[in-house]
Image (cartoon, rainbow, N blue to C red):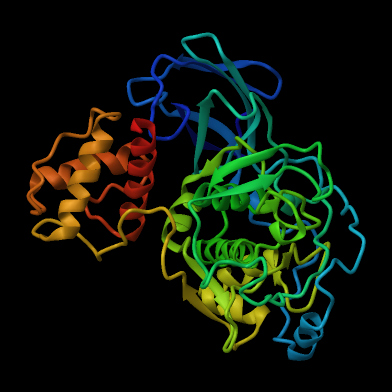
Length: 440
């Protein structure tokens, strides 16, 4: 890529794991090349499974901040249209159509990665995306569920089937029916079907819930957008997914998966694709928030479109959310603009599979059972990540516990503060569960 005003730099961080994120893989040979096949960097992963971060030349951020056509429509709340949508049949009501392909100029750098494990297994990732001034995170797993990964352009660029409209809530059967969850819950994992629901030849991927949300957000919109726009879109993605989980939408139809990666039915997902630090941080913050309305027991199926090629009343406009964030709108206000002023955000009451709920902020000087749980989990994690020091399990948040938290945050690409907030607590829990499962 030639130097000039239209280029900038971005950062690519690559991590390799054996089986799960709880088991880092050392001495993985990694090469990075550009889309023309020119070698850019190579190296071996360290004892934390990490390659030294690579600084890359990429297109200007402005390319991902400017909509491709006319400014998106930002409608007033349309109660009548929303009411009509709720009365639609639960089965799809229109055929999927393919939107036009965007211009060839990419708003990100595209790079190809080849990784070979010490025992000779090779994973290739074509099309890893790196934006200006954003850290791109590429995790590679051995053995992989798919060893040849090809990352498509984000759906905001067009070229994907548009969503077939559905009602935003589903008629729930009586308890004797297929729905078994008494309340919305964030599951530990979901199963993603990589194709249309009826395509029995498509593979299923088992994915950690938060990783799925990060993947979808990174697959659909540009990571350079303002934080409140990213947050609004991510909450919509969470709500959509939790509606599928709570209503057991596909299992109730006899399928063995939770959701598909077909944009005609669900949300974009590419197994093994890279995600972005800004997206990851927001998902860690809001992964248990969903959109609902008064007197509704379920997360709404929060549908959305790009807002330029496809515009639907009562759906979030992706480009429109970006324009509203530019005007200073909060994520909640953005969501209320599209879904109506009566919506509100609700927390899932528990996170399935996590051993202990968030006890509140923990930092230097804190004490009690929450600190004790934290120390026990960090000690278990340190068996696989030896940079994290062993701690006395005394329930006192002293300097050594603070340092252990800092090191954990650095290893797992969290803001390095030494304080355990909501995001850090649940990330520690995620890794602890992975480590514990490996030991069983």
